[in-house]
Image 1 (cartoon, helix red, strand yellow):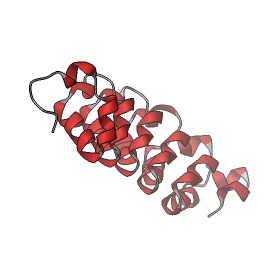
Image 2 (tube, helix red, strand yellow; image 1 turned 90 degrees about the vertical axis):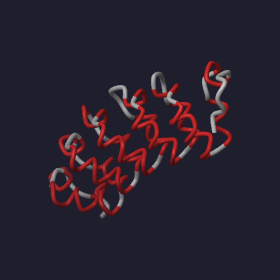
Image 3 (cartoon, helix red, strand yellow; image 1 turned 90 degrees about the horizontal axis):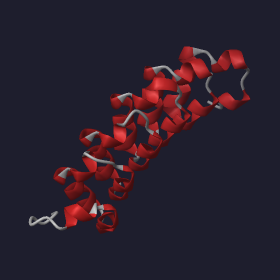
Length: 143
């Protein structure tokens, strides 16, 4: 459904927008501001395409379940998450399992979590570039 061609009234229609974002998460960008702040609508959008998180507004961008769904789909969605989700080891682990280079967006304490670091490097060796220096000097190997 091409929401961008519809009037504002249709862009604020819960059922129509929900169906649209289930088909294409990016349709969220054309939804009303009200619907872009509703957790369930955003969750449907990011489940379809994690990058749709960038179109969410308000506290929903900091909702751990929404962010977890987004980064499980597209690790790079961590870049637009809010509320300290990039410090959360559960969220960080999901992101780096999908894209090891998402480690560059992770901050302490998650960026020092051995499980997060291992997963990132196992996903791609390029993630070593984003491993904090103090973690590289540990006696134990990352992987």
